Image 1 (cartoon, rainbow, N blue to C red):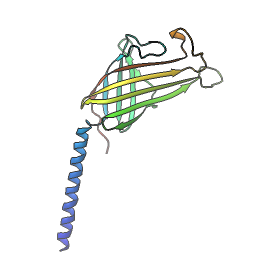
Image 2: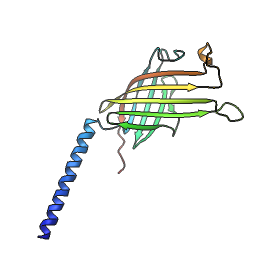
Image 3: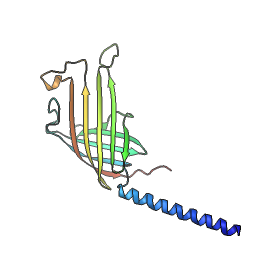
Image 4: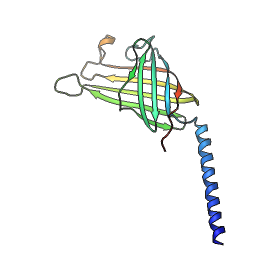
Amino acid sequence: MMKNFIFAIATLSLIACTQTNTKTNETSELYMGGFDGVWIGEMKSNQGNGYPFISTSGRDSTMMLIIREGKVSVSAGNKERGISKVKEGKFKITEHKTNAIIYAQDSGSDDADNTEDWVETWNITVTHKDLDSIYIYFVRSVNNFRQPYNLDTETEAGRFFYSYSGELKKVAIIERVE
């Protein structure tokens, strides 16, 4: 009798585990596999979205995201100067189904008494196109708050935004560590 009871419990546990794994796999497929991996691609500047100046007009940019288990590394650049890591260790990611937000904020100082006089934010929003591609929208904002806000030239602007959008392709899969 006891052997039958233990066999029944073991069988039910095995069935429950199988159903859970099936549901997890279906969910993973439905949400296109998550974001872990190496993603790279070109982005076009969004003309008219630079403020107060259209500083990115006509320039394209390359972005690479390396995402693994909630950690993100971002590299950016262009064809002329290549790409390099930016804001190392500062990026965070929050994922929800087929979408994710990747962001970093920091600040710094240009003066000798080390008072912070600029603040910079990078915001990257991504959504899956399919299993191997994501659409990306990137916005960078900078506020040099010790500079006047009403300067007339782009090179002296104390505050600005610009944005890019495009598509990144998955070029490598990074396995999760169990």
